[in-house]
Length: 276
Image 1 (tube, one colour):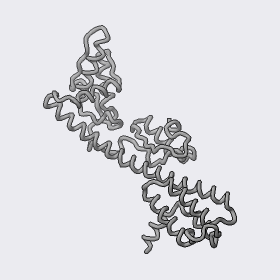
Image 2 (tube, helix red, strand yellow; image 1 turned 60 degrees about the horizontal axis):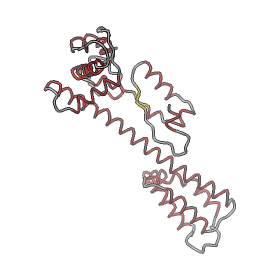
Image 3 (tube, helix red, strand yellow; image 1 turned 135 degrees about the vertical axis):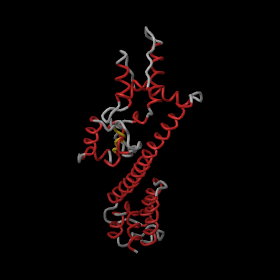
Image 4 (cartoon, one colour; image 1 turned 45 degrees about the vertical axis):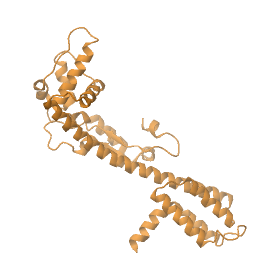
């Protein structure tokens, strides 16, 4: 799935991964974080997250291994009962109804909300699936007719989900910034190689300006791009690229060495500022 998401294009989308903290999630995280060149090219291991790492619920009394475990028991049971009623419309027999008292005994440090609901449903010769449960949760959270006790559970659940997405969005922004940095660097390096392939020994000032124009046309508004623009302006002045168009760029070997590190202009400028 990771290969399908990232694709084969040079400008691959930013990807973060949230895994459960159960056995299968731990195994998947280990595979994605291992020192495998194929995986590392597709995904920064810093963006492989597991649910328990967020620590959203302090000192939980039952397992916190997946997002469903953020559900307060009252909301989980109410959503499950909506699901049972919907399923009963298409089957013989009436809908079962669970109570929190039937579910709570199944909760422990190894068993979370969804698994406890599953065990309770099976005791009534029924079952529950995550998609149907999720739809019922959304319906309850969107209604304004919930009773007072359930309304309190909804508020708690939404606060927990906000905390989860706050953490996810922080990682998403970091992944997006990294993607932009890689795209900018790839653009500069591609244009540099083409330029040196066409002009291995010398180039005119005009050709140097054309190189910088092609690079500039592809840059975004990121800090890395700004650093590259600033450096291209400095190089244009240093090597007199605005001078006579047909004249050769002076000290061409040094110009080529400057191009070699152009993609890292922002990092170099930042390091120079820290040393100053």
